[in-house]
Amino acid sequence: MTPPRRGAGGGARDARAPRRVCWGRHRPGRRPEPYRARLGRRPAAVRVVAARLLDLPSDGQLARTAGDVPVWLCHGPDAPGPARAGWTGRGARLLECPLAGRQLDPRAVMAALGAAGLTRVFCEGGGMLAASLLSAGLVDEVIGFTAGLALGAEGHPSLGPLGVDRLDEAPRFALVETRAAGRDVMHRWRKA
Image (tube, rainbow, N blue to C red; front, side, top):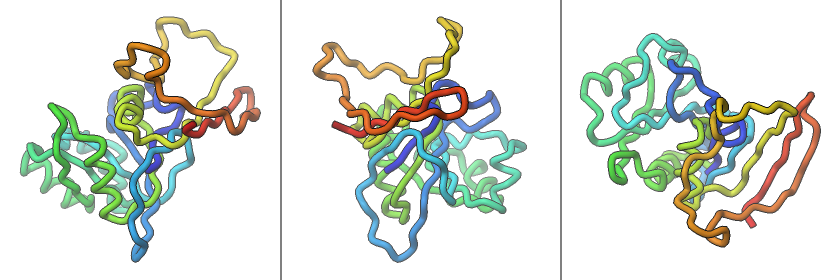
């Protein structure tokens, strides 16, 4: 699978945007591959949003453009019927996924996307999404951007809590590319 951009999150969305957005490449007739995440690549053709209760703005850009650009919504078994009907009526494809605790199970979401034919997924969604994918072992590649700008505590972390007690428990990645991206620096890392 392939997940989010902007250093795997970091508060890139505004308050009215979906919580978790993934972009996937749908290849009909192709055998689904096991889903792995790759943080930071450019989106392909299908927008995928993980929202347990489908509590997304009905007047937002996602809703307005659901008939133009494919939207797949991964939701929990407890998503209300009216929300399901509303999104289906807008042209969205719904994928019900089981929960892990009170949240969507990231492995189940990736399995559902794989079974539906998505072979690569790029995700944007903030530090919590990035941490959930990393904790589940679903990230193959991380792409981050560094700028000559100090934000301090007012900035948003690009990665949520991982529950790591020791450095040797942290997910490891090897640097494979560094290049200028305008005034910023892009760095790409692959799972070590």
